[in-house]
Length: 352
Image (cartoon, rainbow, N blue to C red; front, side, top):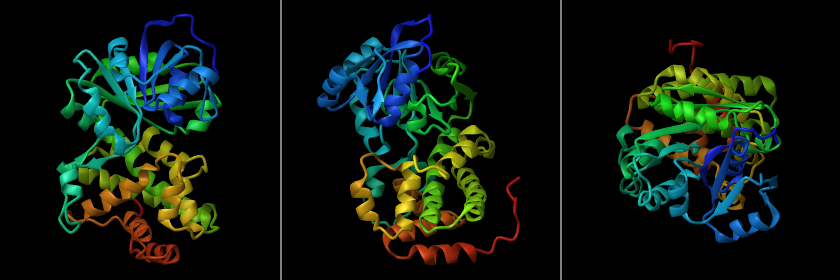
């Protein structure tokens, strides 16, 4: 751990979500503040109190565990929700009872979702971009909170836990949210950049998970750096076009939260999405991979949503489409690779 700042904030900061990333962010925040860490499961709070350990991480003594959302809201003005996207709506539904306009929420969830009524309908029914919810949109529509931000960047939990040098982006429409995120998170081993493009930065963190699964598949098949570099570069182009389709500024994809996070998650076995792809590349069945994972790989759900979304617009997303077919059992991983190598792209950069 980095040395604790002498200027400890008087009011604690909240972290909602006791996964590996939530634990890592709680430890980083504890350099500058006292932290209240919410875990839904009471057994986890007991474990933390007894061992000061979580997901192999030693937790700072400045972190107080709880399973009481009301307590978090009452004690903390600034809160970092970090839970899987599939659990986010239920969390906000419950949390909204205690949230007030003075709260600041900076989420760290790299996922999107579709309204349940649309998703459970016949999958031949089109979904439109207005049907897609980022986590900031969910917070805005389900609670009284106005000042909302997100975290995005190459932030592999294990490396953060080991206190290796890293950086992130705090994005928000509000300067004060960016400033608060930087004040709370920044230390001598963790740099924090700011962005006013909340929507674009959220999408970079979401869409790169698709490419990370594809990169892992290449690795699982035994291919090397040339193939990975090809995938990353073409994957970035696909991310930018998908982002533009959804209404994002392409500039968001060219910085730390875009290229930076893309390179990290397409190159590391510490990435859950890369690991999913690697296991696909080695021939494991998607259902077996999903059922055996302890934590959510957000890219799986993202692939399902984006593949269905692209059917409503005049564009192709060949990497997303190929991995979707592999996940559904309609294409082998070798067939997917052959399809991608034959994709007729004649121009390298065509989005600027």
